[in-house]
Length: 154
Image 1: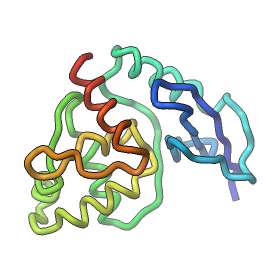
Image 2: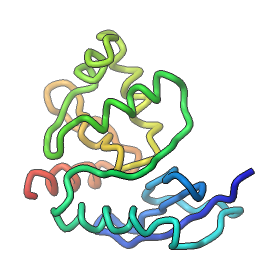
Image 3: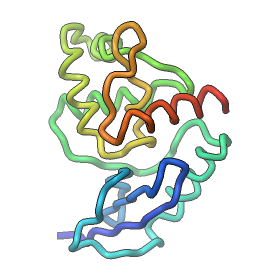
Image 4: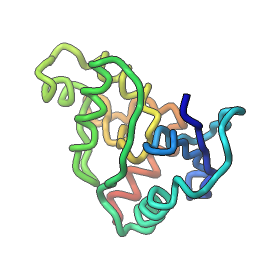
């Protein structure tokens, strides 16, 4: 079993918990505690830290990081679609479902969105409910509002 690593990164949204298996970024979470078996080590996160800082400074609009998260085939497809939502834009759960050629799967898209553990990097915050309502956000609606406003300003 590969070692797990973590790093805590201060951000405008509070402390971000970065997780890695040593090769891939496996988590960017807020309000989360590190796995007790994980090793605190900033080295595996140098590029992720650089890109996240550039994002918060308004200088980066698309992440280019080796990422991996475990999920069903459908969840993987949803997460793969999220990274194609342009910076500063919003789409609805239904629009994501339609892009996946499953137009009746909006609720399943919402569920997959909620299981995303690579917040910000896999931009689930850019998905909103029909009519533009923000819907939910596992890490607090105020953070989703902040991220959307940040992207509008940048």
